Structure formats: structure tokens, C-alpha cells
Image (cartoon, rainbow, N blue to C red):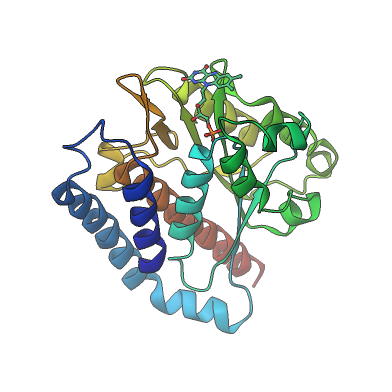
Amino acid sequence: MQENMAAAFRFHATECTRAEPEIHSRRYVLFYFSLHYSLRQTLNERLAQTALDDVEDGSAIRVLVVFHSWSGNTLSLAQAVAGGARCESGATVSIRRVAEIRNEHELLSDRRFGQQFAAACAYPVVTADEVLDADVVILGCPTRMGTLSAEMKRFIDGLGPIWSDGALANKVGAAFTTASTPHGGQEMTLLSLVVAMSHLGMIVACPGYTAGIFEIAGSPYGASSTSKVDGIRTRPRPADLAAAAALGERSACVGRWVRRGRQMERL
Ligand SMILES: Cc1cc2nc3c(=O)[nH]c(=O)nc-3n(C[C@H](O)[C@H](O)[C@H](O)COP(=O)(O)O)c2cc1C
């Protein structure tokens, strides 16, 4: 995890603009990350023994992070979410993308975001079997026209057949998004994802204010970031990445509680 967060920080340091000198100062970065690490320590201490039991009986939880991203902002959050989920002892974490609607070759040759899109394409397209196998499914996409992207919506609608079999019921879910303006629809997108998960019968692990970092970044409904600050394009801030990591960790933790509770009920 430390490597992931260090990588996230290195990524941020090289990619972000100079539009936010204060928030990017080392002092703030250390503050955000120490908040995250203190959350991790508390959770890990509390769960260390039971997590070990799960690993030993081969039932470690599987976390699936599914994203859509063209210009890389949502991908950054997806990577941070996955990094946080990996803090959960023994969790198996996979990152997958949803299928594109537009021609991928056209997107790859786009001069504005083709390079970032190539990075997203490094992840395989998610399959229904992977969703079925997961205990925790965390969905993230850009905000488009004030709500979730059509590509993510198409993926969710495509879950219809396994949803009608009840196969998605009681999986734990969570949501993340990015949007270019501060009030461009982040909350609407997160809530739209939460609504979809509710229809699927999932148990949504909304972050609320369960960790200090959620008072600084993200929202009570999920992780988010704003990709244009004062009109200048910028990458997710360290605080956004830390909130995304905390969301991943919380979802994996809740997923384990649910899985363990269900196992105990069967005993
Ligand atoms: C078709 C389209 C619609 C968009 N609609 C919104 C919007 O409603 N609100 C907003 O703040 N940003 C909007 N954006 C900007 C994206 O949400 C933003 O750039 C996001 O960070 C892109 O994510 P990505 O880098 O993962 O592709 C839109 C972008 C596109 C291409």
C-alpha cells in the first residue's frame, strides 16, 4: 500500500498543474496521507486476526474495481481505490474497464487524451463472470452531462441477466467519479451509481464521514475529484486520491464483514 500511495504521489507530483500551490504543499500531502495511514492502522489492528482466518480458510474477499475513463482522471481514482482495497489483509483486487461505445482506434488517436486512453486500455474489459466472482464491486466513471457516462450505464444495463437471477444481491458496492467543474454533477453521478447498485440488490458502502479524509475530499456518497480548477486542467489531488483509497479500504472491509457474517450464519 505504501508503494501504491507513493506511486500515486509521484504521479500527482509530475502530472498536476501549478494551479493549487497551497494544497499541493508537502505539509498538506503529509497531513492527508497520515490521516489515511491512521485509518488503515486502526482497521488493520481490528481485523488482523479475522483477516488471517479468512486467508487460511481460502475465503479471502475479492474486490473488483470497474472504471470508465478517457483522459485518465477516473483511472487515477480507480487505481487509488484499488490501492486502498489492497490494505484489507488477503483481499484480491482487480481493476477492469468497461467497453467503449466509440471506436477505440479513434479514441487512441485523439490528440487531447489518446495517450491517457492508451493507459486505460491496458486494463482488460470486465466480464460478467468477474462480476459474479467478486464480493465487492466498486464502480467509477466520468460525469457526462451531469450524470454517469453512457459506457458505464451500458455496462450496468448489461448486468440484467445476472441481476434477474439474484446473483448480484448482497455484494458490497461503492462509487467514484470525476467531473471538470466543482458543481458539474459529481453528486448526481455518485447517486446514480448508488441507485443502480440498489436496484441490483447490492449493499452500498457509502463513505459518509467515517474517516477524517472524507471531510476534506470526496463526498458522503463516494470518492470524487474535479479536473479543472480555476479553468486549468488538473489531475486528482493527493487528498482526492487518499479519499479514494479510504473508500476502497472501507468497501473491502465492509465486504469482509458481510462475507464473514454470511459464512457464520450458515454454520
Ligand atoms: C461528453 C462529455 C460530457 C461531460 N459532461 C460533464 C458534466 O456534465 N459536468 C462536468 O463537470 N464535466 C463534464 N465533462 C468533463 C468530464 O467529466 C471530466 O473531464 C472528467 O474528469 C473526465 O474523466 P476521465 O479523465 O476519466 O475521462 C464531460 C466530458 C465529456 C467528454
